[in-house]
Structures are given as C-alpha cells and as structure tokens.
Amino acid sequence: MNYKEVITTITELLTDQLVVCANGLISREAFTIRDRTENFYMIGSMGMASSIGLGIALNKPSRKVIILEGDGNLLMNPGSLPMTGALHPVNLLHIVLDNEVYASTGNQPTISSKIELEEFAKSAKYAYVKKVTTNEELRGEIVHALKNEGPSFLLVKISDTAEQIEIGRVTHSPEQIKERFMSAM
Amino acid sequence: MFKSEEFVQKLIDSGFDFFTGVPCSIIGNVINNLTERHDVTYVPAVREDAAVGVASGAYMAGKMPVVLMQNSGLGQCLNTLTSLNLIYKLPCLLIVTWRGFEGKDAPEHLVMGRTCAKLLDLVEIPYFTFNPDNIRSFINHAHNLIVENSGPVALFLKKGVID
Image (cartoon, rainbow over all chains, first blue to last red; front, top):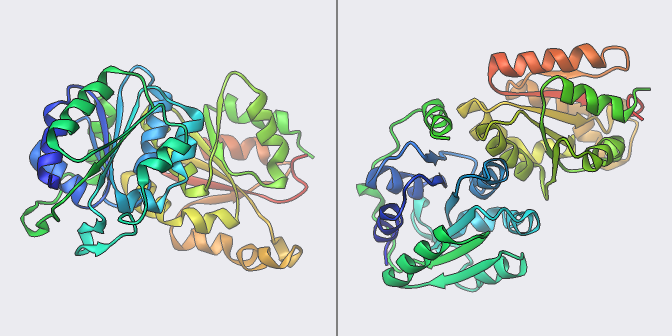
C-alpha cells in the first residue's frame, strides 16, 4: 500500500467524523484527495496531532475523532499514547501510517523499522490495537473501529514512499482551517 | 497570600473550564484542588507541549482552556505555541510558575529565571506577573485579552503569591 491508496480508502469510509491530519504529506494528501470541513490540517507543531485529537475527543464525546499521523509524528510525541490509554476516550481512533521514513523531508529513515509501534499502544492500554498491511485489512479494520468503542489504534504499514512533488499544498490559511473545523462541530 | 481554592474559583468564574498541565511545587495545591473538583476537568499531561496540544483540541471542541506549567516547560512547548496557537489563533491561558526569579533558586532554574519573560517578548505572547493584590483583576484582564487576541496569554506566578 502507498500513502495515496491508504488515505483514499480511509476517506471513502468517512461520514461526519472529525479528523486531525498531521503536518506534512499526510495533510497535503488528505486535502488533495478530498477536502472536508471536518478535517483539521496541521501545518506545524509536529507530534501534536495525537494531543490535539485527544483534547477534542475528551470534550466532544458525541463525535468520533480520528487522528491521522505518521511514524515520525508518533515517535516525536510517544507520551500521548499513555495519556490516551489512561484517559480512555471511547470515541477516539488513532491511525498511524508507518512508512519507516520522514517522507515530507525526503525519506530519511525513522527508527520504526526496528520498533513495533503497535506494542506501544498495547502497553498504553488502548482498548483495541491492530496492525494492517493490505488494503482489504485496512478497510475491514476502519469499518470495525468506526462502529465500536475505543480508544482504537491502527498501525498501517506503508510500502511505497510518496512522490511528494505531485502532491499539492493545503490552500486554506491556518485560521480558515480552524474556523471551518470548528463550524463542523 | 492568595488561597489556591480561591484562585481556582476565580479562574472558573472568569470562564475558564478546561485545565491541563504539568505540576510545579508552586502550584501543587492548585492542581490538587482542580483534581478534586467535579465541575471542571484537569488532564495531567506528560509534557508541556502535549498539554498545549490537548488544550488546543479542547478549545476547538468548545472549551476555554488553561495550561499550568513551570517556566522550564516554556522551552518544551515553544514550537507548539508558535506553529500552532499563534498561527491558527488558538487561545489558552498559560499559568507559568517563575522559578529562578531574581536568581534565587537552584542552578537549573537560573537561566530560564532570567530569560523566560524575554522569551515570550520574542515570540510576541503577552504576559503579566501576578502579585497578591492584582491577582483578581489580572485574571479578568487575561480572559478579555485572550478573547480579543484569540491567542495564548501567559500569567507568571512567583513563589509565595499562592499558598
């Protein structure tokens, strides 16, 4: 699976879920595939997607909140995992796209090829943890996680590195991103 | 000396309704009081940047957040403040304890004690310093400023102002 395929599959299954998209290629790809008012696109503050998503999930229990971030993002703020496990928002789905590189800066390796990130989530007491490697598995797990209580954690192994030149940038200003997102609540 | 309970009540009465942060001995009783209350949430954060991230999410979900931290934590969350809160205009009240004030503290607090206010000047985050006699009016003022500016505002808290 590559980035585009994964984000396309996730996007196809969404209805009104609130999605926090991490900075870099993930936001750019999500924006390019299907821009939604329910998407919060980060352009900076790397590592904070999981914390922002946690803050939303705790205060909007009536809505499903999805965090969409990469292995580099997660490794920058791994402390958010035990915070999520301890606070246990049942409406949270945490998706980590793991391509084992910092794709946005030119595919420098992360350390995730040597570390099992899903084990972090298990020991942090997420209610449901899965690792997926195929599009079929991904589809099944997203459907399952959207229906069931969490906090859920999906580690999605990405095999291809993204061709970042082809991917557009988010054209909304940060303030517009915030205002649209808040109006979607 | 201002009572911790009274301080917390004043924050809540001014409209703040979501609290997170990392402890410091100066605000130990404030955090204890917040944790015991049932009318507001206090989320214990693992780091100050995670606290600012959670607070930003809480704001977008309709809350008016407060982040409590020691001034050592300002360094830890500087990137989140500058590349999230300041550019997206996400408000939060930062209650920052001023360790190392006037050079009277343990060595690890001295550099930040000398520079924490200058640091906020540099990144253009407004701040005030609490005294026992101005604490009430400053909380009101900070709330108004946060709403007006739609961004973070810091309140420095020296040792001995709150019990």
